[in-house]
Length: 217
Image (spheres, rainbow, N blue to C red):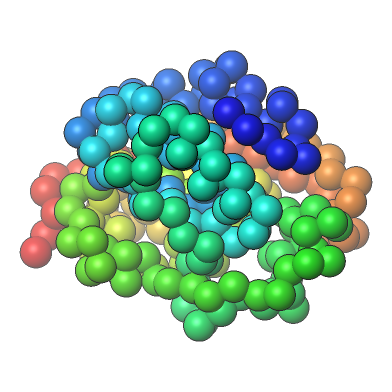
C-alpha cells in the first residue's frame, strides 16, 4: 500500500487492528458503496475479502489520487470504481461548507476548490444496486448524508456501517425508522488540534445497521 505524505499509521485501523472484521464480517460476492474512500485502503480491503464490486467516493484530490494508485498496485481495477465526488443534496461541496474544516487538513484546505456531488439514490440508479453494503466514513458529513437520504433509498442496502465522529446524535434513530436493527459502539474521545474551535473534541465510534426483512420494491 502507498500512503504518499500520510503517516503509515493510517493503515493500522483497517489492516492492523482489524476493526473492519466485526463491522464487515462477510463481503464476499457483495457490492459495496464506499463513501469516504480515503486512500483506497477500505476498497483494497473489500477487494481482498472477495467483494464483487466496490464503488468509492472521495472528495480530497490527494487521497483520490493515492487510492487510484493503491487499486492498481493490488490489481483491483476491474472491481473498484473510484470517483472524485462527494455525497449530498447540492450540486457541489464548496470550501464554505461548515463540515469541510472538521476533517480536511490545513494543507488540503489550501488546494481544495470544491467538488461535484451525487445523491445516494443517484448511485443506486446508476449501478442498479440492490441488497448491497453501504459504508460511510466522512469525518462529520455523515449526519447530513443520512438526514438527506430517504428511508426507501437506504433499504436498497442490507447492511450499513457508519463511523460517527461527533457522537451518535440522530443517526441511530434514522436507521431504525428506515427499518434497520442497529448496534452503536461506545464512543472514544479524540482531540484534533487543527480543527476550528468547537470541532476539535470528537466522539468517534461505529453504528452497524442490519436491514430487517427484504427490500420493499
